[in-house]
Image (cartoon, rainbow, N blue to C red; front, side):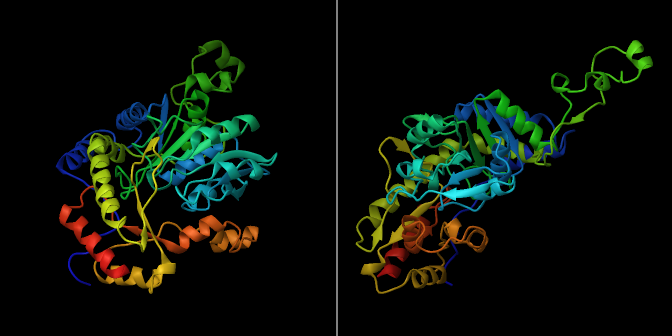
Length: 400
């Protein structure tokens, strides 16, 4: 390997981020404290949502959203084959099934023109992906979902800061989920969030996040027990108010809580989001200018009515014009210190999904064609201009 290795993605942390975490470590609340609410409110404001519920991971956010939408045994959800496995697994966790709709050949997002044919009476939710940071075709998806009475859970793990028709991604569907893994737009180590304008959905997610347990007085189901008035004697002696220690488990939830440590870091990172997005767009512009000149490469297509958050920069190799395979290009770039990757292996071709549903090559041809030629190249805000130039020159040299 030559020169310094450039990963495909990496967090960008500064001293103020570290100071924010240290302040929490020196305080009284490491978890279940005020930093969580502050972070939720900051994200809700940023994405234009009325409510935001922070959870442990992006996968947890998907699981919570499916639960809130009422997904359960006998149901199915519909998602894209070009995504991380969690976009489908979230339904499986609840006893439901997963169906796929093929992608558009240009944006690589879920194709709404193929959606209606996939809907069945058992379809409870649609989970479109804002793939690479470009918002999906959410208006036609919402329209179809509304006609069928189906919830839309927008998987916006790639799209914090993206815009669709001048509106921020985050409040464009019933629920939107975000991820705060270190390779994403803001880093919290791990973390996720569900944004919604529906107060009832937000309450269901909060309940599911904490074992299905609530201590909110207004939510108590057993009023006498809550007030410690279960016996004739205590009913006469105690008032109707909930006892301070009392809580109720009202559903089978999970421990998906996030910590104040993570949320303090997230709040600090969120203040830099605009700067991070600007740098990602600068890098994407440089890549587009350079790679569009090569007949061996296809650059990402961007719809004019949306602004990508550029989580990933995906090249397609025009393999029919090349003497190398994708694997040879990948290995040569890795050997040259360029941390390329491939996002993603189509979910329907993963062994678990093949075994469960009998999927095989040919089921979703656009997704498979995309995967066969896709290559992720480095994209993160801390990249220097020299690193960007090095990626460009090395990619062009290696592909021939």
